[in-house]
Amino acid sequence: MEPMEARVAILQDLKIQSFDTIRFASYRTACKLRYVQKSTNLHLVDIWNVIEAFRENGLNTLEPQNEVSVSRLETLVSSLYHNLNKRLPPTQQVHVDSKASLLLNWLLAAYSGDNSGKIRVFSIKVALAIMCAGKMVDKLRYIFSQISDGAGQLIHWKLGDFLREVLALPAAVFESPTFFYKEGLESEIFPVENKITVNDFMAGFMTEPGPACLVWMPLLHRLATVESVVHPTVCSVCMRENFTGFRYRCQRCHGYQLCQDCFWQGRVSLNHQNDHEVKEYSSYKSPSKQIGHSLRKSFRCVPDKQIQALPRFPEQPEKTLNLSHIVPPSPLPSHNGFPDGGIPGLYDRSSTLDSRATGLSLDSNGTSGTRGGAVNSNDEEHRLIARYAARLAQESRTVRSGVRF
Image 1: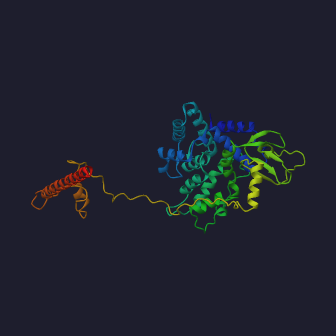
Image 2: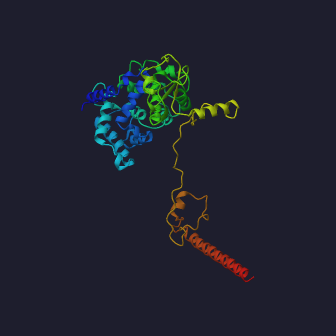
Image 3: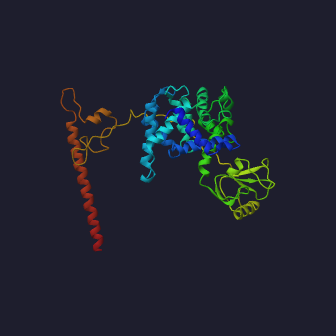
């Protein structure tokens, strides 16, 4: 299947799902990308699995601007699904060839508009990091590692490159009229004169409302968390019971609640209007618990809920350990459980590493300078053994005398 044909096939499936009837562009984009994510089984692949696949296939050694061929990209994508099958039970195995072909063609259609059959390394990293499963904070940390310098500071032109690549995802599902890149967008998010660390980067992207061009990205993660949430109530429009997903409650109409499908598509009933203020819920709390919580709060038994603080990370990148000064493993013991150079702790700590490693050194006359030392070490070893045996004998006599008493 050609890349464009694969893209058209996915978009036809999206039309069947009626995502275009959603009024809000951010929810519409998130729903479409969530559908692509589940169609390609990327919702089963964690961000750490993606990073490991990059390392296994050598993408971490390539420059971001380098281009890779279709065959190498196919190898990378196939390894993702092969490793996924190793973690899944036998009854839930995915079909590697079909899923790899679908994801491969969709990536090429999104990022290889000239039909050259090649795709940039940075495009692959951004697309798979955003579309896979995992925590938002872990994904942003990985993205920041790709667009920062050795001192842990953001490189602004690389931020612009990231925005171009990530906004190609909405464009791949025909949402580019709302979410698109424009010149100077990176400066609007973070001014050029500011030094941006990883914590500034995380706060800028995870603190509401966040960049307007990327509001669909946290929604994509929230959709995954609410798919299995059941609301034991009735939608006031479609009368569906125990619906899943988001729940919306009107702040003006008493007891008026909507499921996500009715709210997103603008369906109303009774006196409710679409311009009424509504509140979104991703979980359900029974009315009795709500009343009890309100009473406890009125009596100040429950403190006000504080906004959850974002995690803080070291602003300086972690340095690679220098192992050149680390002492290598000691040689295997040759007799009595001790090495040739004597028992541990008795060697000269001021001696060089080479002399301790070899255990032999020659004097000016060419004779071994450690033979006498070896004899002395043996004598010392024998004395320690005799002392230890005498101590054991003394303890044995003490125990026997105590028994007689």
